[in-house]
Image 1 (cartoon, helix red, strand yellow):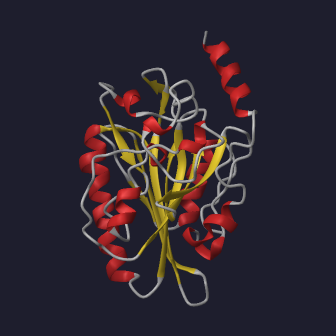
Image 2 (spheres, rainbow, N blue to C red; image 1 turned 30 degrees about the vertical axis):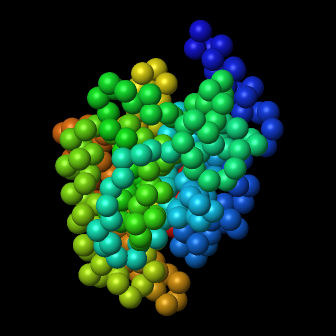
Length: 265
């Protein structure tokens, strides 16, 4: 049965263009250090998304339609804004419907027969025990509208509850405080991603084995003068490890992904 579903998925992915954008750097370059995106994996299962709400792009997401989770989201930090959290979650209509508009929207905006074929839905998380873990988070958003736009399921992955609400949340707070103090006069670019795991939530959405984040404070010479990264296993006893430089995190990610991975070029 799973083989049949996999074949059906590949068939659906190969029909039509279905790519939200075809040139990540041209369309979403403002969210990448020096306009250069992190590594983009080849293959029809991946989508490049300029996360748009009301015709404004707020960050960029590289999305895996087979595992129904993001690979990473890239965003710009401009200071702690104390944005209010919303509870309404959206989806990316173009992921399932090639003819849909560019803005994130409610699940009801996509026909029920194709809704959720290539992306996670709210119902997939029901009674799963996992949180919808933001990649581009509310706490580091550069405006309230940007914070609202983080509530799309293409920017979320199943995250262990205590890891999400306590352990990872503390790291986000510490990171924001540090960047506001140390990089306030520079452009700050952040990439947050996940590593696919071996388990699936409700047999539908991949549960990542790890969550990770890296940042780059770009100086006047367009170099990452200050950059670090951290990574944690996706469990409630996670020991989050901090790397003193991005290259060390990239090496760790290359081992986990089993492919070349570059964050800031």
